[in-house]
Length: 230
Image 1 (tube, rainbow, N blue to C red):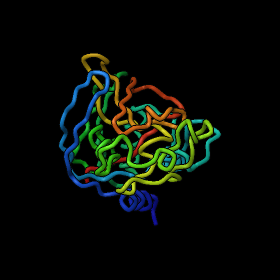
Image 2 (cartoon, helix red, strand yellow):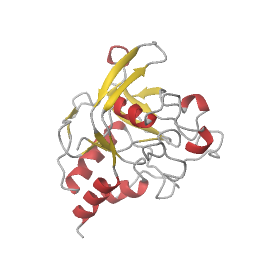
Image 3 (cartoon, rainbow, N blue to C red):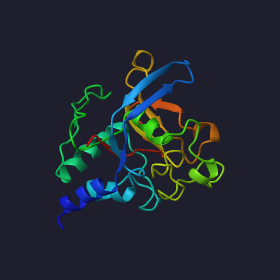
Image 4 (cartoon, rainbow, N blue to C red):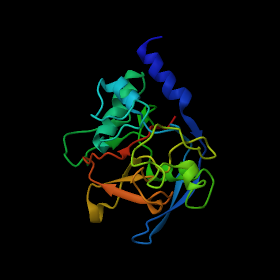
């Protein structure tokens, strides 16, 4: 099997079909609530691993972490570039076009393309909840690696219980970049990330918890997960 066929097979066979629906998102700082309609899409069952990142780019950010752990120390811009490169290598249509803006405000997403992309914030929370309405889709110690049980380190993917739709690590282990700009009127180009991480207290490890930073940020508990429109 060719490398292109192998990558395409991994992307298409392992992604989980997420049904269309509606979600209400909430910003806990401003108390704003807004409704989002989510079309059917596909989402990877766990974050991009160091193993997959290396297979596509030929290298991975320096770390003693093992290959099945989520890749971290990747910026939002790194994640977008990875999505495009993986899409091309798998014979799919890349979703993103981008220029040289250091704030990444010139990045455009083609939501109709069949390649890999970051989930929108609404898609992420909708998929995380998997039909539930509470802060979490299960007991924290069972579903997540967080400060209380992680031993101060990120763990291999899919080693905690999944939600009802078969998605692992939506809460805990590493934060995950989303497509959206957080609040351009206040924070400019800052992008959203979700989910909580291995170093966080329980309050950060909740479905509605929103964080943000500049799209060039790289830290040791922030990774990303692949989505596809079709």
